[in-house]
Image 1 (cartoon, rainbow, N blue to C red):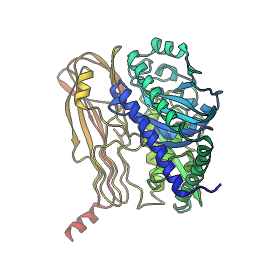
Image 2: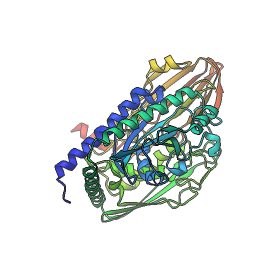
Image 3: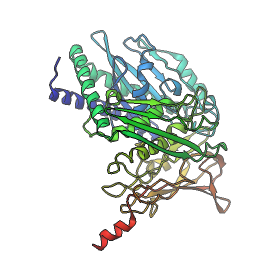
Image 4: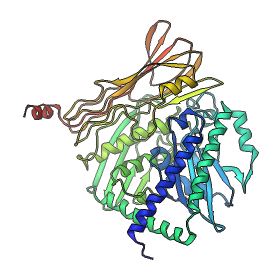
Length: 518
């Protein structure tokens, strides 16, 4: 059936509006500052097969991984009205354990028509370290692992999941309240989707996928055919591994792209291992950035892209591997190597490296947990300078406001500002990072997961590298450096200072001076 392109466009925007409404419900219903204020969540809609049909502009690593894995998850159940399924297992559609996904089926006139889903980062999911993002070496030590399971079955709550939360998770009332907010978000998505006529909805889903697939092919076709290679490293796994290489070979052949990570480091002891769904999300994100903004956010736009990642490697972690930082740090380096490779094909479109880290900071105790990722510098590009002090690439959260942070936690913010001069020089400067200091007001546990403390975000086309980041601790009257990844106990009066990396510069600084002289 031929479907009017205007109708498809209107339908696309309607689905996107539903996803945005889901996000608004989740934000206003959540209790934790991490979800309510930082907006560390994502909402999406899927067709009856589990294929992504729409998503809001939330967290790239959440949405790309859901697009990659939801078909398998939804295929595990015989769905009924009133079902709600929850999961976080990185091997079964998850990312890392704090990211919990809630899925609800959509029935229209008794027939399964699609799914509504919300993924959110919970500040704690149990495990050895408050915040569930320490330097553990086994997945089971990072927290509660939830294989896809019923929370509600045909409208009846299943007690086992809630019992597991009460037994394993810190600040359990906050966790359960946030889960309820996710369920509310899914419910509004399901209600809106159920308002369509079933046959018309199926027809429009099919038409939307056809249009999206063509957009994906056009994106790949616009890249010159060739083989493009690049590599970069993670500085360490936090457990003494030393540098870990991530190597990519991108082959463009007409309307197809193949991304091969063969030669990347083997899986390691520390928590930087990356589930395949996260690796796919990082690859998809880079190609999505090359597409026009109006392209529908569906699984079909990624159909022309295939992926090779050796099982048991850093970018395709095996069962039981610790993955807390794979989702937040390794994903950023995968983006870096993808951009480095594609810059050889599209030098006018690809920016220099951004900060290359999420700068994860976790304070906590048995009673409370604070989690935040910190902004940094974006890379400069052929059209201008990089942006300063922004969340980069695979994360898209807001910061924790000083007022909210100090109201909820025994912490005081002493410094918060732009780290001037940290962007790389060039014809166009990289964006600057930021500086943030927290004073600890009671004894607590600290976990840091960061990168680009020894290496630097690379410049392009003759631009200089951005400045590396730095972690510092004021303790007993003196400052000392902290490793990029560490855990330790802090006491009242200690001060943590994090300086985030700047983005790489673009183009020769000499050329910039010549232009100014003119």
